[in-house]
Image (cartoon, rainbow, N blue to C red; front, side, top):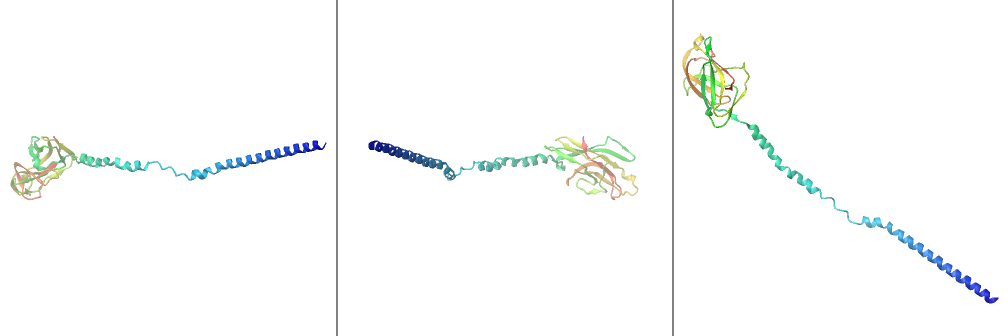
Length: 224
């Protein structure tokens, strides 16, 4: 009877020890799990400590953009050259003549003043010529210079080499004016538009030495 009680106590003691060991093992497992779950919590700190990625290398391309557009700066120069156009016709590159087949009326003679481009390049006639009667090729003007007939609008006349422009020149007989002091003139002195040099066209006429009577009238140039 006593031996049976001892055995029973041993069984309970052994069972209690096993249960204690089992509980101890479970407690250790919980501690390991809490440490494992704590590892992800430290990951943000580790990712923050990593160096930042370098920015995309777009700055170089942006800086090189203006340099690639530099050749466009030559456009204004080319445009300026295009807009320059032909030069004005000058006396040195022209020859002068008249065509008086148009006749006359009431003491006036109408003729076409003809300026021909004798140069090697195109030139431009713009507006009115200056015309006066003169004593000779090197002499000064006699009387009043030609007044402008503005009945027809002025136009730009482009003359290729060998081409001519014309303007209507009217000459009124000097003796028609009672206040005219008549003197002989050897011909016409002609200044192309906007030129200070002149051409001499030999064509003897009567002139008035005084500036009162206006014997000459000139129109704007047109293409022939």
